[in-house]
Image (cartoon, rainbow, N blue to C red; front, side):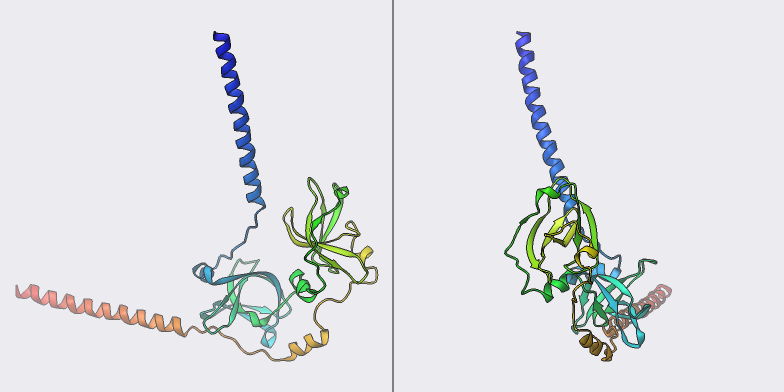
Length: 285
């Protein structure tokens, strides 16, 4: 009897063990999925923290292009206190923007060296050509109906992930475990097919040359990259137009400070009067 009971217990333990392993695998899968999820870095800025729900996610690089050769950085969109000055043609990353009550859009500024933050008008910034710019410029030539995955033969091979077809920015990745999936297609000036990868191993919105995934820039474009972006003459005209001077409207903050100061002053005066009255009443009694 004891032998049969022991066998039953062993079977039960085996079931529990299999169940436990299944739960463990499920937990690991969930954790991996969470790690792969996008993580948005938020600026350590007091104005952003108090207006987080009103800010728009930008996540793009810009070039400074303000009046008098610089862009003035203010403490916040409602504070005219100057915290920094950025020279024109400086490239910076903008994570979030905020639109004030007058419709002026402000970009949060983060100094990578000092970790200081501030805000500058978006009108003083020129976007650096990127994959979003490419998609806007060639929207009619990009086929979003095509989807699939790369040839499994590229496993363990080095593949170039480009910012966009014709860009110089790229990263080399050794494809392992699984092959990238794509959701859009574009045919370049040389007749080569490119596909866009939504996400692969931390890389988002990148392009791969389907006809030559392991080819570098020199092989793809021995005569140089095709022209992308706006007409240089039009861009020069825009740069010669003097931008309007934009300063934060802190009148509301000042009015609030004045009101608070007046209330505090009134409370102090009323308290002083009350103390005098109480003192007089105490002497009479």
